[in-house]
Length: 251
Ligand SMILES: [Zn+2]
Image (cartoon, rainbow, N blue to C red; front, side, top):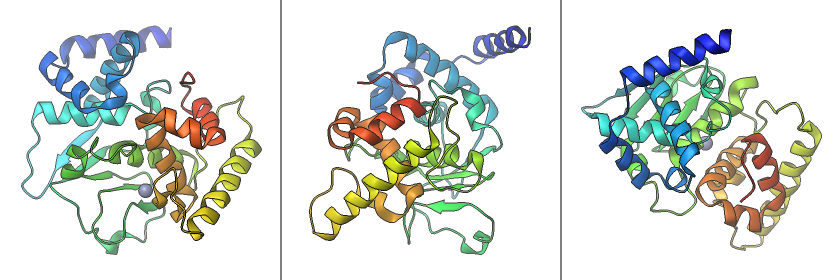
């Protein structure tokens, strides 16, 4: 019964505030993972993006203006990781703050638990435990220029990671997943990558992944959606864990 009411609410929302076709097509052109989905997954993603826009507050700052097309584009990227998880996985926070460009974070706020960030000086994105996601719009628009990377998916992966506490590369796993397998897999591969990096070898993943376990999970998640075949080829064990976590079909 609850599900029926919920589904009715969703249908009503989608009917009232549908994503315009032009905005949807623009988002598909920009978002590789969405473009590569089958028709029914795209339909689910479109509903999720509608819910995301209804539930989250997109807040451009510093003179930035975001039109409907921009907002849809952002929502579509944001909902890629939860395609098979559902919008409930983004519960507990409300705002997406969008700077025009890479931003210098206000470090007086670092006292709050669970701050994670993508860079040291100017950031492309940041996600706070139970707080906002912060993004640089120019970095959102740059998605697709560097294969395998996606700042929105990166920050959303931190949000999923923080559902069970601090960002530590250990999101809440599904019932049939083994915690030990997850931890062992990510630690073992992380050690191997670190060794390769120390030897000056080129890594099959953005070396930023080696910052800490949280960044490893976030960077691996980017590649999982943006370049799944490469991740499966080079880091098959990590890929297998992410297939289970994101409930995706193997590529
Ligand atoms: Zn990060």
